[in-house]
Picture: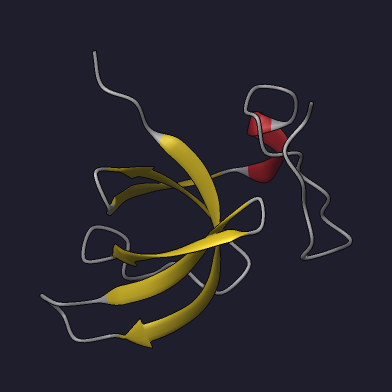
Length: 82
């Protein structure tokens, strides 16, 4: 089984077509992720990340309560539910 983890696009680092990369925030932990599959993502979007690759953009209203990252549309800050 594979595990995809939701994170929020904090900032773009590289928008080149094949080597696109962004810093993704996972509840306060930021990691660089490959973004070639989601070049249309903008800062603040939630993406589903597996093995360092953002696979798809998530709809924040659809994932409310479904993922460990709490979605607060009024703020860029979020925390893991405990």
